[in-house]
Image 1 (cartoon, rainbow, N blue to C red):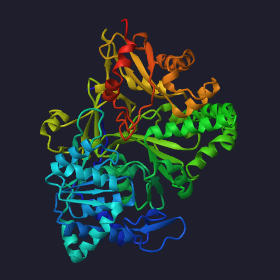
Image 2 (image 1 turned 180 degrees about the vertical axis):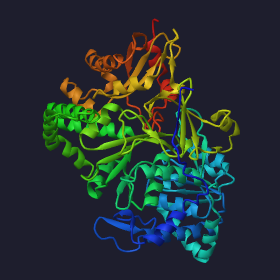
Image 3 (image 1 turned 90 degrees about the vertical axis):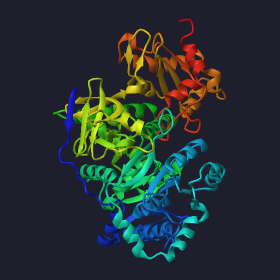
Image 4 (image 1 turned 45 degrees about the vertical axis):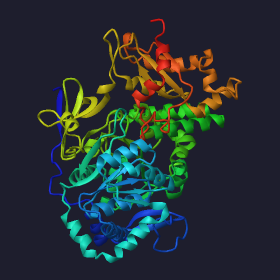
Length: 609
């Protein structure tokens, strides 16, 4: 083993069920605002009083009452301790309400992405043995109607937008509160809380079993380090899908700390909601911050202030890097930074509502360049690392201890080891007990002495962890040259015109790349080249466009030895999308899907060799 890091003081066992915190909050601070529901409030779950202004607050006491009422409804419907109930919905108040109502009676939530295909939905429902399913929209209900003949265990389907949760709560009137109390008292830390099916970039999704203790320990450890962010009075707008373990961690953390959460189902309207509700922090996947940067850069270019933005970006990065030195930023840099703050950075912070000075990212690697840019612009982006199987967080950069370019240090109770082959191994209370209905995969997930294979490659940097790539994504060329593609892909994506980059070359003579063009930048580029109506498909072989992309490839090639450099590239006619199945819900590229779909383009990269 190359190195071992063990954070002391594990969180411990004997933890209660996750729903217990809802009752604690209602008892200790009943009037604290736990949620904010945007107006107009959906009829799917009624508001207690008329909405005045733009939002309706939900206090800790009101949330407890809502959870209790719906939990009684689930009992009336015959949901038993340990029953699996699927939840197919976008991020909204009812998502969290259903989650905690099921936890309160010892049932198991099985989240499903609202973008999942019928095949994926059918697989998850069948594999989990779900006895019930809460869906959001009529389209979801229609999908399930076509799947039900193959799902004999599925007894009930409740549609949120049809008012089925309200009807379910009405059925619960016949159930006494003491039955919920008795069921809640039975829930222990070792009970299953959820089965989260990994979206995955290969193969069938596997169901990760997470216990109440797994999630509680992870949240408690994260909250301890993020106490300056997660606390009463803090607020966020949650727009990531709650089917993802990262968003779920924040949901539970907000409840545990009595911070205020606003759900946002409409991703396209997030910026408006950020300006309206002015959160104190936000969380997102790195791709969101990449797009935010590109949007700010393009907006400046449209206003003929492109040079100013480029200068401000350089100043922000230099200022941030200087903060990590003993001397800090010098006087000229501080003066330049102050001017750029007046002209550029304030506008970027205003787009997030003006109060947000901290962001948390996860789900994919975050580039060092962007990390320094945002910190220099007054928004500290804290990167962490984990996976669904670890509830999910293993490491985190903290406001009090950050090293940009790393994913931070291990959380309390987490042990990490970097094996001889570079793979990160994990152990601790946050590690899941195994995959549902899949003992072979469970055995393969652990070493003989009980460490979890993460599948990620990393190295230690004075106690800070750096992620260097995915073990399964190492490219070995025909000449035996090993290449980790992630850093190269990130470097190519830094170019304004590039949206995505996928390095190929496994078993081939040399590394090459598939590149997609950013749709927004493309509009300006083709106008500047007097081809305002041309598509990428029409111009992807044009010398002008290839020269532009070549500059990005050349910059990436400077990072590696000659044998590892991208020798050639192919511009694809369209960008990758989640709808086409090329991206996961956290916007990571499904490498096998893209390589298979664009096999002809990959072959073209090696024609004649």
